[in-house]
Image 1: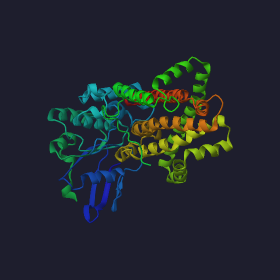
Image 2: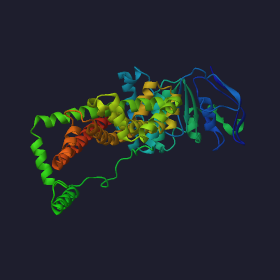
Image 3: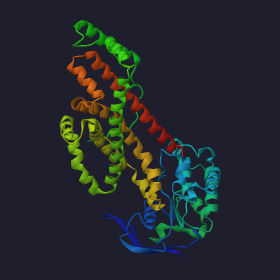
Image 4: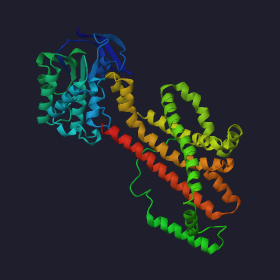
Length: 201
Length: 258
């Protein structure tokens, strides 16, 4: 079932962020949301994730769905290792299964983080931390995945590698990604799956 | 009561240096020689000699065991209760409100009043368990509660999105963030429990305790024995603090390396 947004409105004080916003996010596809800074992309994601309440309108098709997310901030537990940060969102017995350990190791390798599994996240660079946050979301058990600028802070070569892995592991699944970069949007979802937020508000 | 800082000590600032210890021992020895009356200020040399005289006796070790079991038992009970009740208070405002007057009372009432009051209710043998428990509880409770309150809200939001189980939230988010606060509380509590526990024993005079030995040293004006037992308390207190914190650090280290 597609996610439908009908007449969604949200204001912060006197400042309207979304007014009568309508959109549809098809199931099993990656949709990228683009738009200028401050236009409400992150707010839209937060509303869809249920982290904020809309002033009006409704969001259909998300009830009971398992969500995964990469937030604007990495939201990693600093004192734990990168591996523990990825594992923490898994449910038992998956978390301690050999099969998951193998998938996780492969994920770390594919994202260029081979030696980081047992390293504390506080010891990792910004780009590495971003990739750990992304891997945590990609390996989680989700029905809908929200990505808020998941590739920020990555150099060009790493970004290509990370986008390729993201695309591969999200194939056939519902993903909603906020990005500023058209190339990223094209690589992830394709031309017909880009929502320019400022056009539809 | 504000919580004790969980920050690690700055290098050098709080470290005990051998030369500084020797300096103060020399000052002590000099002052004792200047006064010239061991009953007023015993010399460190006499204290060490008395300690060597006491150490080979079975009674010496029995007294240490008697007091350690009770004082540290009170501490461990307090650490457990403080952590559990802090978790409940963080979860339920009513529990915090219910406990607030009790915690405030325990902090404000002089330890001597508690000792006398508790002596009316229970035998002097177990007095130090209660006093140790009461003195340590507010420190551990307040510190742990503050640690829980400082858990990053963004991490909790993330946990909500991923529908992390209560156990996973506790294990991966709460424990690593609260542990430094709990550790700081334990570090202070371990010093406190010995001070309050032996004070209770001196008043209650249970047979075979360190407090009884201190009391008798006072009655017979045996200053060297008084200092020797004080030194024993300091050493046992330091030893247990190091051991307990090493175990906690070991557990934290394992948690961080998961």
